[in-house]
Length: 154
Image 1: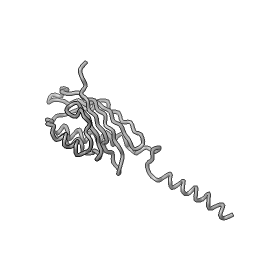
Image 2: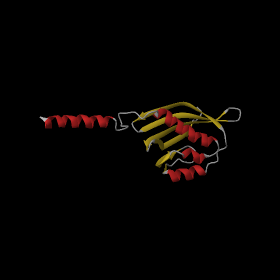
Image 3: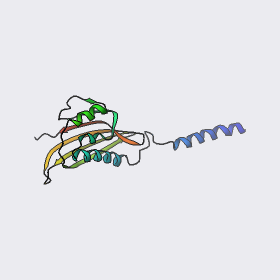
């Protein structure tokens, strides 16, 4: 009789410990949307301060990137992306993020937004649309892909 009780106790004990084992695909990562948007803002703050390489501050080693400036071909890897960003001359400016949306799927987050680069009087000098894909690893969100495109006038 004692043997029969041990098996259910082991099954229940294993199940209870698995319930508290950490984040899974079925269990949302706390504050994911806010954390992803904060990571993006931190990179854009550096960009707007005239430090384009700073935009890649949260990038994963295997990041990929496209844009409408000179990265028409995909850029692969953090070092290649930093090298590319270092060729850009970005004057200090202010900006606004318009209509950001974060969608989270387990350890993956997708951020879409419109970016307006602003002049000294608050006038919109450039309009972009962007998608950044993030992966949660080692307790933080890391950019694994970004794609920026200029919004063309109709």
